[in-house]
Length: 308
Image (cartoon, rainbow, N blue to C red; front, side):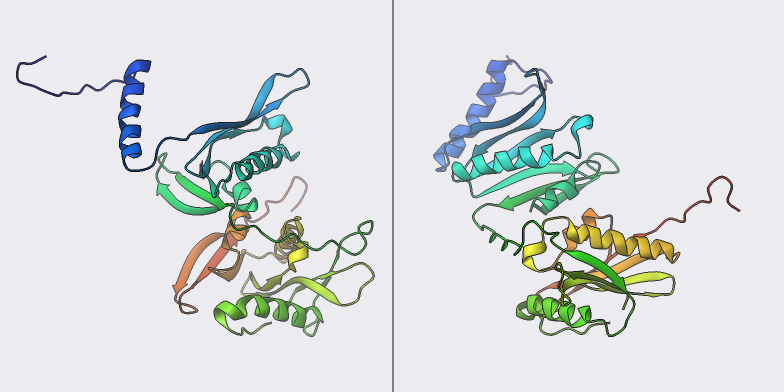
C-alpha cells in the first residue's frame, strides 16, 4: 500500500467469495441500521422430466414482503402447454403463504412481456437500449388486492359462449356493449357514445347478447369502436378470440391495419400483448386520466405459387 493512503479500490471481474461477501455485508449492515434487516429467503419451482432431471423452472427469492422472480424458463418442446402458468401460479401461491405484498420481475422486448401481462403484471418502469435496440421492462403484480372470483356459468357441461358475426347497424349487441362499457367507464370518465361490424357473444340457447366487439371499416383500416366482456367471461381467452376474428375480417377486407383507443383505466397491456403499439396519447382525457391510441399494421399477403 502507498504510505498515507487509508483507502483504495481496484476493479475486478472475478472477486473471491470472501471479497464479494464483504462488499454485500457492508450494504446489508447499512440497510439494517436503517431498520431493514436482510430477510431474503429463496423460492424456486423446479420443472422435472419423467426421470427427475431438472429441465426448467422458476428461480426467485422473497424479501421485505415481495417475491422477486429472477429466472423463468420452459424448454421449447413444452411451451404452449401451460407449464409457464403453472410455475408462476405455484410461486404466487407460496408468495401469498409467506405474506408477500406483491411480485416483481424484469423482462425484455424479445422475451415474455405479454405473457406476464396476461397473468396480471403491469409495467412500472422501462430502460431503453438495454440491450442496444431492445427495452428492459420492470413489472409488478400486487398480491394484497385480490380479484373477485368469477361467477360459475349456469350449465358447466355446456359451451360457455357462442360467437356470431353480423353487419346490422341496429344489432342488439350494440346497446349491450354500450351499457357494459358505460357502466365500467362512468366512475372514471362519464358517459360515452357508440357505432358497426359486430361480433356477438351469447350464452348457449340465449338470444340476448352478453358482450362482444363492434367495429367499422373506412379508408382501408378497421377501427374498433367498442369491446366488452362481462367479468365472468374474462381471463379465458375469449377476448383474444374476438380480436383474432376481427383481425381476420380486416385481413379479408384487405385492410392496411387496425386502430383503436383505450383509457388508462382500461386494457392497454392486453392490446399491446396482441401486437398493437402506441402511436398517440391524450393527457387529461378525461381529466386525471389518459386516452391511448394504438395501432397494428397488417402486412400484405404475398401471392402463393400458382396465384396471379
